[in-house]
Length: 327
Image (cartoon, rainbow, N blue to C red; front, side):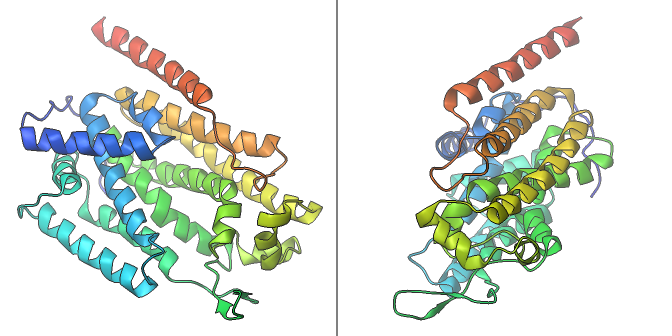
């Protein structure tokens, strides 16, 4: 991928249809992206609109993939049809879908490769291809229920690449960068975010037959798949279970270091937004660690007041950046 050169600020789009489409995407991000949206607010308007368009696109793909009222085969077919419709819109065919309208505009403005957006959709579809654990869980009728899981961390890392690192690669196209090192750092930062999500969502994922903890790590810490599913009811962690979750947190902490390096490589007007995003996600990880990895008794989150405080610090950075540019 070629770097995204620093350029003059992109003017706001005056086309009322495109402007309305962006507003629809912003509404989706405001409603659904509880962590991301706070960071978006620290971006200049054209970049904020583009990021919201990408988020709305990703959100819709996730919704199709997660629709439990449809079979896996039906969801795959739905995703394929939706992606085909997006390709037609991206190639200039008329569409009434506001997400497609906004994203098509953002893709051209910020030179976002179509292949990266395809990879975003591929990432959501990976949950539709279960890998059966050694001893699959059994439902009430006694039938085997396959688990979505991964044998090794390298296999999990590939999953994280498609569902999170690709998001980072798209975002830095919008943020702007010239140093190609930013690409690997964006990939690593995405993995830090996804590992944090995995820790936060262990209980909910287990209840849905998903386990995003490598089987090699379960074996290393002598934890069985069934134990984590049972924790959604008992919620009393053993030492081995806690050590397993702590190992995920340590990996995430290592990847967060890449985020701090990435901050120095993107355009100055986007740095406060990335800083806000990293700060919120890192705060979430630290709250999980502070609870001694009890992510079963209740869902761990960053309180609204804490997110606002982080956002305000980011907006202060925006204010000082503008002052410096005016001198």
